[in-house]
Length: 81
Image (cartoon, rainbow, N blue to C red; front, top):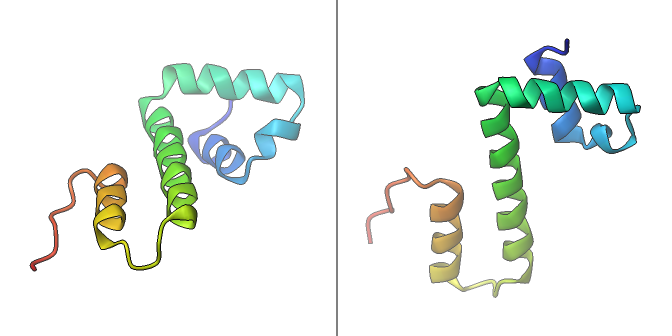
């Protein structure tokens, strides 16, 4: 059974795509049982979406940037205006 640090390293580095079937199945099994690693993988996906969205946004589009930050960090309090 894989440990959390192994699973998160594989998922963060995208090494999982080229990993052997046995390793991919072990990661899936771990993710089914470990809420913390599932949350980590979801957060990685959200960060990736935000970065891709930022790449196409206008440089001075502060409202869009703030909306993306709220999506990535939903508990974040907005800065004072």
